Image (cartoon, rainbow, N blue to C red; front, top):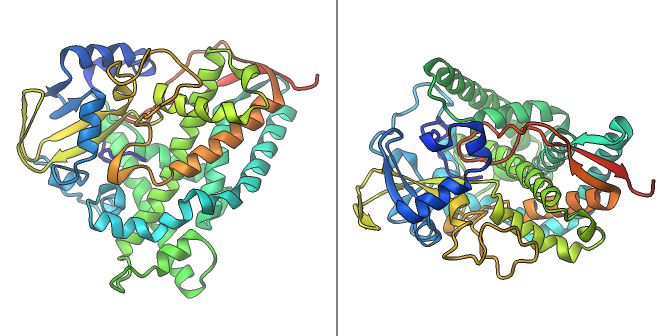
Length: 413
């Protein structure tokens, strides 16, 4: 999951407020890279950085660019209990506290530890496709039938929470990543729902944490509830709650959009036949999806000291948004950057971020996406996008579509 202000302060730039512009922001990115690679937007009270070199440098410098929104000059302390829980997660903590928090769950997300999960993920993907094919007969919605239920079920099982609650998890996740709008009434409603989601999740996980402390199990909630750091300290209640919330939301929403964006890319570039039965070709194709249509388009940092970049003077306390989606299309870094090249190599994209805050769940997201897409391309023939108007996800940093209907023939028919 990326760094963004959970209260919606990071609103859309004017240039991306329209539906079509957020579906295809890449021409604007190119214009910004060429003409204003570092610029200040007074409407959002934020700096923006668009070039690969600058984005990577900012993500690599924790001392100069903090993830903690409380370092911003315009930060307002939350007024309601529970509203600020997210600030106690590693997502918004700088080293060394970030490293302490990450160490609690990091081992569970290493590729070696995740290897044992592959059969279960494949079983889930197969069952979901069976349900979709049996129910819809030639058409399915990639988001609702596969890309959302698969990762949310996996992370729920890892955490030790009931997968049957996944509709609640989706509602909470969608609320927490929603973008504020220009309409005051609508913006207030978004903020209100975000506050409600945090409070509901706090009550939900607080009960689970207390249960696991009394009755430990082999799951991540138990690990979080009972963890001792190197100095013997336990996580605070707020940190434990925040960790659970972060893993649930981050554990499903990025992968949902990775799978969905991959199907969109593969369909638009007629790749399903060439990828069928070839997992070795699928892996670089997925990396190209992460570059070409990054599920996370932007992250936020706060300058901790005055700094000059591209001739612009950024002051301590200023917010700066780094545009991963633009960096990943930077022709200064990638040959033929606006082309989808499924076997691109090398491909040092920033789709999962960079540096200290490189996405903890990247190995899990890659595993889930590769299994899901392998199952889909092997099961379905003649896959094509249905004729429908795509609606972008309602977020200023998460990139995907709310629904992606496809038509297909069942393999072997």
